[in-house]
Length: 178
Image (tube, rainbow, N blue to C red; front, top):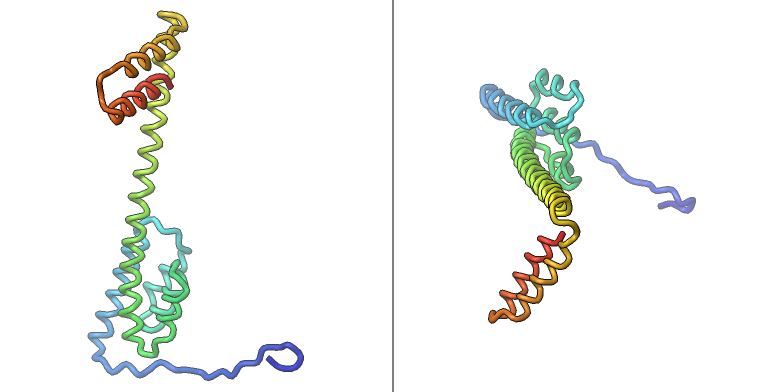
């Protein structure tokens, strides 16, 4: 920071290392990146159409790694790790692993979402059925539900059972009451 409060930094341009691998190996790595990226994108991830097109058309492993790292939701430190690697092949291998990891995260997130939705659906269904039972009981017997609940609690109080059993029974009566 200079005396005017302006940040000053020294920059040094870094260049990719030369790719010393055989062209067939480089092509294999590029194909692997594309496959992993296509698999990731097929999971319903919202990506701009030009991203998939750029990945499909580019043959440079370093550029693909940088481009994908920039365009998928990775933590900043993982993006920095990709960008700080000077070897295009090492960057490509790192992005392959990160894409796999992100695909797994998407799968786990989707499972959790489905479980939560299922649980909510079950709870709503139970609530709806309880309300129907209340309405049917009211139509058939009038408002005797409070007396019935009190009767159950009285029976639980005099029951020869442990406190844990009584607590469980009380919880079930409360569920019935709701």
